[in-house]
Length: 136
Image 1 (spheres, helix red, strand yellow):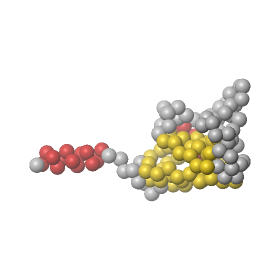
Image 2 (image 1 turned 90 degrees about the vertical axis):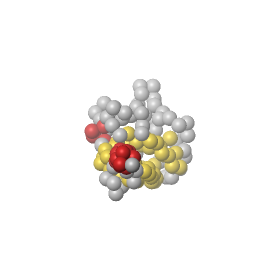
Image 3 (image 1 turned 60 degrees about the horizontal axis):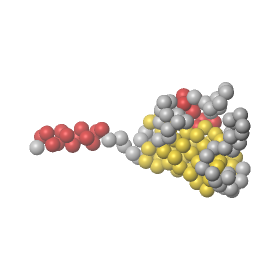
Image 4 (image 1 turned 30 degrees about the vertical axis):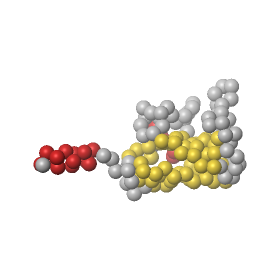
């Protein structure tokens, strides 16, 4: 009986608390065409490669708000883009520069390309948080 109780306590302690919500307010949406898409990353090793979670919302000229629910408290970074033509990818020109509006958490910008995870990193407390970015 005691071993089952200890096992249950250890198992429960190993599970993260999935209680935090991240609300992302995106300003500067140029049109109501397509969707605004967000990819959430939880480490420098996965940043801009393998997102932890993705969410999308219909575009609205001006601003769009997206809600990512059930995240464990911790450090994250996110990338946002306006998929105006609805092709489910960030369009780029011939030299690789984005042709659709985008932003990163903290409105971080890289010197020659995307910012580092550390520059875009935000802290999500258990109580949740709201972040605002401006598309460019």
